[in-house]
Image 1 (cartoon, helix red, strand yellow):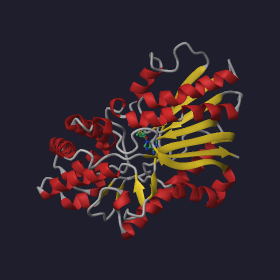
Image 2 (spheres, rainbow, N blue to C red):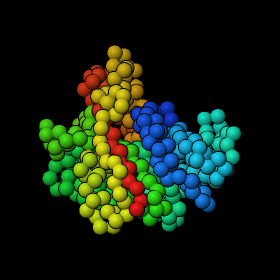
Image 3 (cartoon, rainbow, N blue to C red):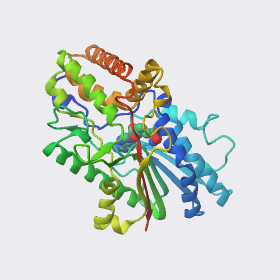
Image 4 (cartoon, protein in one colour):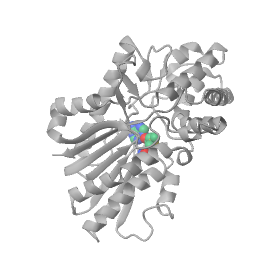
Length: 366
Ligand SMILES: C[S@@+](CC[C@H](N)C(=O)[O-])C[C@H]1O[C@@H](n2cnc3c(N)ncnc32)[C@H](O)[C@@H]1O
């Protein structure tokens, strides 16, 4: 499995053990519950039905927590009217887990009438729903993933924020193109007067960083690089594969998020900007798992669990798989990687901390 062709072309393929390791994402959703209610109030009652679409919904609790305030707010406006809640994600999402949760005690269906849960399976870089059929579109902790995997000349780093020169420029172009594409498609799917709410990891200006911006999670990605490089140094990973591996994602600054909405003729016609901000997360913004720092083993476990949840499929398909001769060898590489990653956090608590700045974009469809 050393051929480039054997690698997945997807930027990401689903989350691992997500509900247990997504406290950061869940608190971002919780932090926007009041905004979701306000947006629904502002949209008002809709016929023939009110439709919420949550793009990049994931396998469980977060998307339920997006739907609940929307449903409650809508029921205050319209006690009877039909509501459709569309959960939209890639085919690899754990759809069974999600639909089991929806009708269980943690779901939003119990004791409610007139709510129709739906799934839209595909990429939010393609059309997922029909023209003008969505009133409120949400996208939490997902829009930073690119439409495709990226392989470029990137020795010394596995992520966008530390790239230099041509590689950085290439990556920036991909990021802008995907952001424009995501917004353009949502503009087609939204009804007039509807809202798009995007919340994800962001970056803030920082003159001390190589590219002038500090990106959320910089400690985590640098720890991934250190652990992976130590495996390459020990002959366990092919250096050439590591040098061409970059996580296919980008955390936008306020300026990067806003610029195409203002300058792209179609987007500026389609959307009025209500909010574009990047601010520190409401809690533990300096070290998301900092509450555990006095217990280095627990701190290291929390970081490893979180990282596995978002990075495992990407690392397996783009780094361990291509570097291994067979599935067992890839599995052994993954195990060794997490062992080294966890040891790094245990040995140096605080060095690779997860700093979190949240990007919020709220746009109204004209
Ligand atoms: C970190 S999870 C976030 C899940 C949930 N929204 C939350 O806030 O907890 C990212 C989700 O985005 C989905 N995703 C990534 N790229 C996507 C794409 N191009 N189209 C649809 N979903 C995508 C992944 O499959 C995953 O479920």
